Length: 204
Ligand code: PRP
Image (cartoon, rainbow, N blue to C red; front, side, top):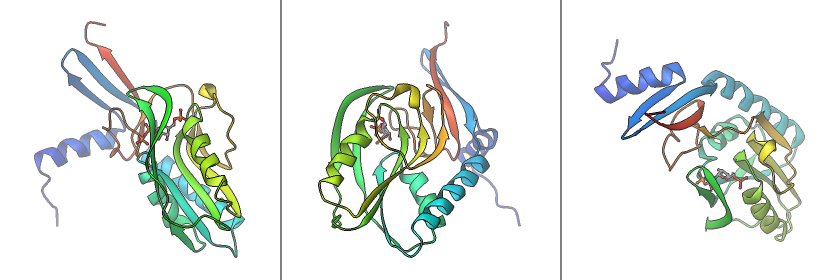
């Protein structure tokens, strides 16, 4: 039996199906060009989860996604990790629109005990490395048994602070990416694929 799609659903299914989007906003044209498809992302997430499961065989994990950006990646990742785990969250931000501010604001801190546990930090994108470095240093002070980092996207060209990444989904060039949890001005996080974001004047 077929279910009828309502107007918004139909529009979204068209947009999502192409892996690209274009939106007119006042004087600007906003476009998203495909970077990684739903299938490419899901395949890579499974590979990462497999590597993590192998490395922590016989152990337990405390998985800590860094919100908001990592929410979608982390939810897919933990569904594929085969060792026992618990979840906690950290919410931090460092971006103002498309430019990094360089300052990290911690909105929500972990509630679970960290001491003596195998911690896996999950990040959507590592850009300057400032956010991750700040959070890593903070957690190391709580003396975990181990602290590993899993980042979906690594933008090495923009690195300002050296931070060790144990698991990397994709190496990407210096482009602004939205979708699969990543935003522009808190929008586009719900796209199931990753797209390169551009905001241009219509006049050109
Ligand atoms: C983004 C992203 C990373 C950070 C990466 O978060 O999710 O946490 O920036 O940049 P950096 O390596 O230069 O520190 P953002 O501050 O936009 O908050 P969000 O996760 O709520 O989108």
